[in-house]
Image 1 (tube, rainbow, N blue to C red):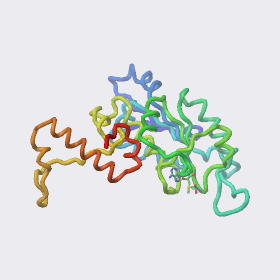
Image 2: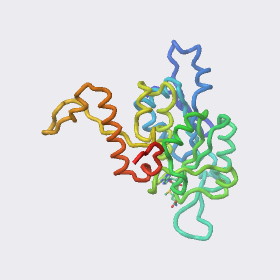
Image 3: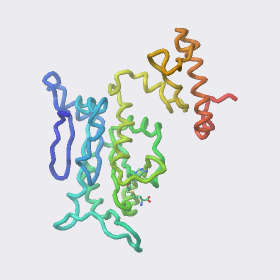
Length: 265
Ligand SMILES: C[S@@+](CC[C@H](N)C(=O)[O-])C[C@H]1O[C@@H](n2cnc3c(N)ncnc32)[C@H](O)[C@@H]1O
């Protein structure tokens, strides 16, 4: 991609390359753009998947911006050590409080006011569509990607950091989780998706999973598209989709179904 990526003071800024047409309003737009700061040992892993497709185009267009901050720059000694053995013994290494503290003292003054401070962690609150919607209304987010056995608890307590999990499994590091959560948030920012209504009707938007989708050919491997979808009757199609949404949610996700507010069974 043709983003301008520059490295200084442990920071890899991935911002828009301005087109001539937008030279006048570009910097101002970027100053107001939704901003993600990510503290990581793998700054070169960013923007990663976020640099592709609609999120990548939006990044280039300056609808959002990304700073990957290299934790190594705040490490100790010649080798820039960032981790040490766990207090009390045990396997693995833990990210040091003093090192992460320095990284945060660098990042926080640069974060827009009101941006949540998040540590990606399997011990955290599970990430949801509601959280993505909330973050999309904020000016951005600051994220810490863990590695090894995780981060010294004192940093989490001292900075009152919100711990958020991508799901009930353990990743090698927080970077993939950060990219997944940023993707889910950025696609909700105005102008990022071509068709705004597609976020209104998708899974979780009203507490239900989405109905199944079909497209051409009308028949494949002896399987036909349900007749109602070919009928052109918009009222019937809407009714069918709603019924399928409810049936799928009830069967697959009883936890969502139990909390579905408009349920009437
Ligand atoms: C190997 S994991 C550490 C797991 C930790 N020892 C535990 O058992 O909870 C290393 C890092 O990956 C990230 N990580 C792993 N699983 C994650 C998940 N489900 N959601 C978000 N981040 C995760 C966290 O940043 C974590 O510090």
